[in-house]
Image 1 (cartoon, rainbow, N blue to C red):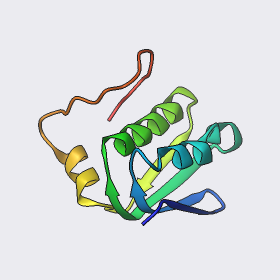
Image 2 (tube, rainbow, N blue to C red; image 1 turned 120 degrees about the horizontal axis):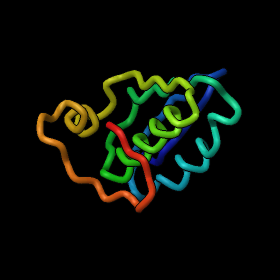
Image 3 (cartoon, helix red, strand yellow; image 1 turned 120 degrees about the vertical axis):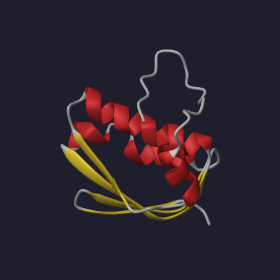
Length: 104
């Protein structure tokens, strides 16, 4: 399923696949989101799959919220890959462009 993002107030529901093919849509939707809103809630319950690029995109959004002192909440179990990534005991190496801030 393609990536679909719907919103109501500050709540954004993410549906489908968050991968390197859909990252452009995700990034365009959330570009400078914290310049407009002080807090957002991402519902990832309907995310069917996510790859490394999707995890990096979520991490960048998280970092932007920290840098701008805004609140980002991510709710829903989403897909198993994302859950496993954040619950793993051994850190994974993720390629991030130089100068990027990433926290997980």
